Image (cartoon, rainbow, N blue to C red; front, top):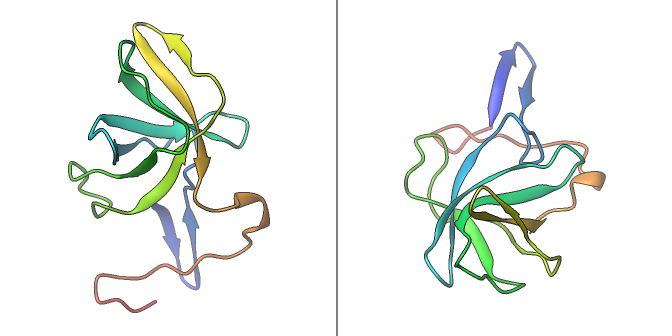
Length: 115
């Protein structure tokens, strides 16, 4: 998400940011959740009911409930690490669809599809 714009450059919040909460859907089950940073450079899936069990490799995409992001953008997949239980919800570690540690630039497209 573009958070600040200046002449010639902008600040962008990545999925690893703890300030960014992205509504997502688990493609195989259609469960809705929220993706956010874990504070250590990773991302996690929040608000999956405790009784729901997701399998590693399930794909996670942006949901139709966002005004900021279009629906259907693949953001990652459920990790094979065990989920935590917090306040009656499962919290799943997520493998992002991109290696953030090697990303040094980002092209931002406008509504017209131009940088």
